[in-house]
Length: 182
Image 1 (cartoon, rainbow, N blue to C red):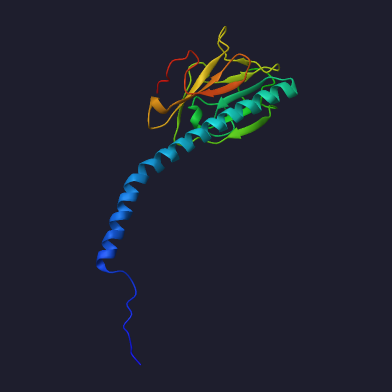
Image 2 (image 1 turned 60 degrees about the horizontal axis):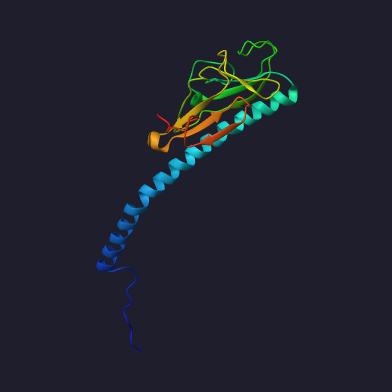
């Protein structure tokens, strides 16, 4: 009977070729994966914010009461913090745009990671009236937008346009059709 020596594993040449192929694949795939991850985070943030707006509008119409949204880092009080820090939705019984005694917080939104949210018209508060229309807190201004930017800058920014009707819609352009700025 003849005994053969079987070798298991890779030769040095096979290992070097495998490592070279793997490094080429990773070099090509890594930037695409990062872009995909950033796009998904941004879309998730836009969807969470739009869902919060829809919820607040629906509650205002259903309850026939003014419902207020405001940025809130602690989930209990309105604060002069950026919207990406979190937000609360509450029934604003006394219409003072702050959470007071006897006012019910309907929803707390957690912080949104990896995006910066800027807005000129809704910096402190967004109010939905009982008819579903919005109010900014500035007389004569009843529409506006939220711009969501990530580290890639304005060319990848998303805009949520809030029209007087109270219906939000996401876009790659500002309400006036121009490109967003970050």
